[in-house]
Image (spheres, rainbow, N blue to C red):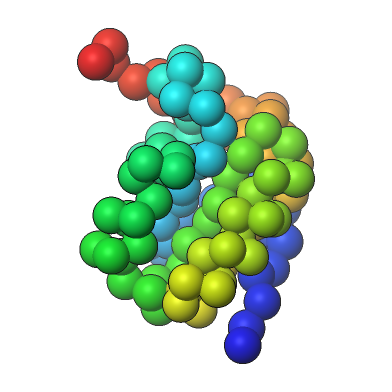
Length: 109
């Protein structure tokens, strides 16, 4: 069984540029206020559909606030059959300071 890998924003950015899926596990309001451009929000309600419809072999980068909760989520996704999972060290906060122009706000829903 494989394990997730912890990566810095620069490596996550390169993976994203190569087509990796980026998922954000922060609370919905925080995600809506600002998130990595192109990322998907995942929570306890959306994760079953995400898993069911995902390519389990595609690279997957998990993002939280500071890089702690994403490690648990990455381990969970590995246990669900994903084979190439990464946890973003420093989380969204470090991404935001490293790549400020590559964040987005959700349109009101």
